[in-house]
Image 1 (tube, rainbow, N blue to C red):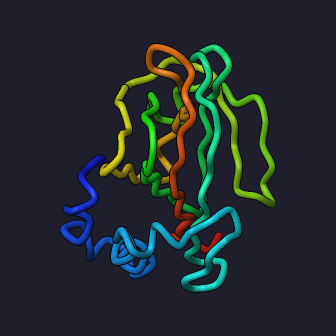
Image 2 (spheres, rainbow, N blue to C red):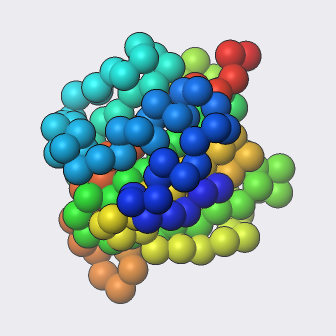
Length: 152
């Protein structure tokens, strides 16, 4: 997991070439152009999409993880609670392997608040519970990069 300010994104280059490409695009000009349609930077290996939704109480959320992709969550408007835990310590209740999606329930190891100007990178060993309201539900908007780091 990487949790940092957008202005520090380039400090994390060197982990994987696809991650480098995404980190280079954590810039206000690019983020402002991303809409609800997928914006491909390197085909299905690196792409970004904007999501706008209402945050929910913790009990309405669940952990998700991926095996081939990492996610970069970049908050644009609003704030949400996020929790992180190792998938091996959670109970899987759903999976869609074709979409690299695995859903879990369990207890968090780390809790954080994602706010504008911040980003969160979650790797395949970082199951993440997102969309959680802090004090009350609010509308948030964020850009999420999907970054392939494993082929199979």
